[in-house]
Image (cartoon, rainbow, N blue to C red; front, side, top):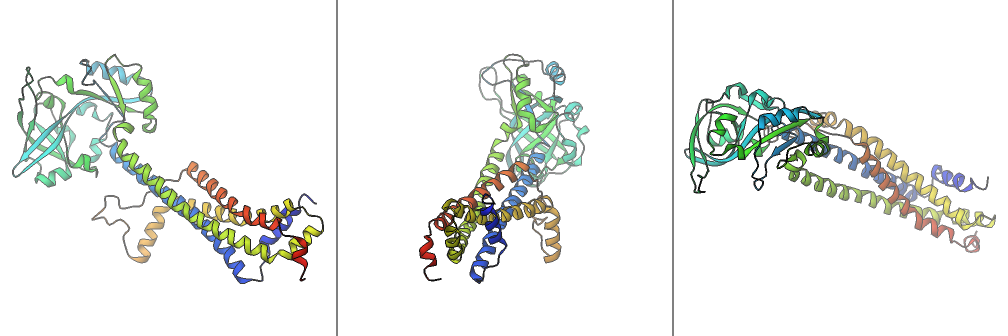
Length: 416
């Protein structure tokens, strides 16, 4: 019974109603602040996870999981079609296709824009990319060798006022055998338009037949690369490292997490800053918890003195208020986790309900590409959010509980 005394008294104080309104008010406010802070943090990070996944999906529509290439300083050469067959047979590889990408200048009066011209093999492109899903006009099969046709991004088509069948002139900077500049001009016809809703693609990329692009370069093998797709895009760094050990000397491999590192680095920084800012709500709740426990200690001075007189040690008295504060705080954490996971899981439905209720759009379809609110709840994030919140609130209970254990029984009972 003595061992359970702090637990019994602490839980009794949690259930008891204080005769002082302000003590009860601060108790509920501290619990509510903890719950709101934890809930807000889980919901916001879940939405940011969803936006990160949406961006990843859009980037991988026109980008493979990895790229095998020859570094400029290597001066090596490779039989890319034979290499593609070799890579397709490797473990965890879903497909491979040769491609070439060069810088160019698109000219159509009065516009002149820097672009990237990508040459692909339509027969194998479906193994590594999902270009067909992005095409809104025309079709990929129109990119036949010798046709001099291109598929352009929607943003680029709008900027240069291009439509199906319109000509666009490309200036390709090349050099001759002696290294002297020897730019080449070639007129292409627009055979289609794609839309990925990523400015790096829609505003600067043109896709043509692999043979047509190779014909523009004096040494096309120096610019060739190989697109590779794995069975799991998220495991691309590990699969790329394993595949690198099977490649011929002079070749390198780079996975998509390195190629698009700037996007996801920015998202990670934003998520970190948002987590720190929202965790301050929990810190504010901890101050409320300190104030609440301090007032409870003042209110319970007589009870503390009686417990001390009956032989209760200062450590047990301290444990009573640690238990009271921890239970209140952890109830707030548990409530925040419950509602945060629920709202985070159904964020899209909740947002749609609020839009219908208040007649407004969170993401205006005329302004934003994403018209729904994506979300992805991650268990590991919930665990560390709950752990940090519990730690902060537990630390907040220590000082008031320590003060309670140091109250002299004689002083507390003097005027009773």
